[in-house]
Image (cartoon, rainbow, N blue to C red):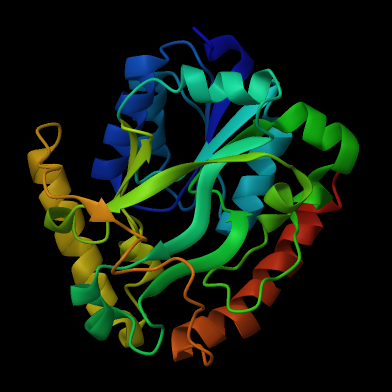
Length: 299
């Protein structure tokens, strides 16, 4: 059991049903590992229930994802960190993946930022993006990421998570610095399961490792963004289907989120869509600025 050397870190916005499954899946395989949660908002009663039921350590703090991520890393006291979104569900033990990092065979384990949507969703949800949900080859983000936090912090500190922005990236890419500084990436492979909308099944070879229900915080992230109405509808429908059928999931007929009909070698569209431009030009700048205030608290 690898639990004593790793902590699970989860920034959390909204979606209590998915959050409870997320925590239960971690405790299923790692009953003793530290689970640290930063909750955005005023939901102290909900978080107290998670502490009672799952033994989490939590902080209710009104901050964005980037700042929550940095604060959780500051609080992490184990050698290894596994950062994951609240809309992820662990499907099997990750001991073998943790061992890759612990013994130096991999600098990190994660998901490469080359993920395309199923074709049938592209036209409605992301017109103009040629189907790309994420595109930053060679980079990883914090949806699911295992790395040696103590070694990283001793060399680069919190500032090290800020990477070089990638042309055409479909993400704020504040945390790309981890992958850019660490070598020997070991990637899980993403697969589509159409029954659950935007969700991805993540496999290590033939082994299902993780479920990621994209935009599980659609209530707070997408609720007021009218230009993403189609995306919100798909995210909500997929999550409701997942919640109603878990743990008896129908993962038949999965297809790669890259491959013959979604070639990962194809470059992203030359002109980003409106949402992507807004994120790159406004959202990233503001979040990075706020996060650097947290970084400034380093000792």
